Figure 1: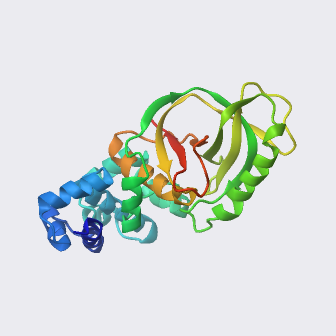
Figure 2: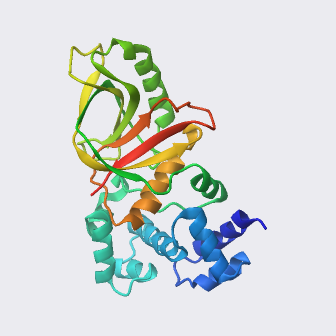
Figure 3: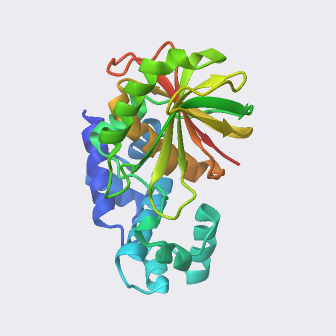
Length: 289
């Protein structure tokens, strides 16, 4: 039995009915599996319950409507399965620390990742190549030195990751040996929001140093303050890292009871990393509270 294909059929049914109440049994019937088996398989594949997935996809659908339509917030709330605008607003503020109206005013400058729609390749990736539960740890303050660039992520219509990040890493690795007081072992990618409004992010390719010496030409320093981080393992080629980040933000974070602090995300590249190998291992961590 091709469970991935049948789960995808169930997901397709959910996507076609996001504006309506969706019974778990109806999803299972569409997939051709008993309700009990479908929910067990779905949870094993995705690490979240079918009920949670449906609720979060309907919530994501409401975010799209806030940005792309002039529909009244009460109508969007009811369409997302909430019984009132007040309950929708409470859930919204809990997730994003702002009201639906404030979110709508952000327009496409919003930096929130929305709940990803699962497909077969995504299901296979999260089931085989990601640590679905992270290591929660306290990151000590770090001082990093490296190269910096601005970029637009895959969630922006201006996405330019391919043009910006690989050349940055090439340039950094060529001149890494010119950095003083390096703490050997790991290179870091640092992703964080800029201070200016908009959807541009900033990225550092860097190493940790024990003390700040003279900076090599074109290099900068960046301080990472102490914080609690959720650290995930990513296995396989780096080209699939976006699927891992999508899982972290749109599946794990939504059901974790935690919130992103809006501090810097960290990428860890150690001895197990190889950019194109299926056996490569690196880590991605987000600051949480």
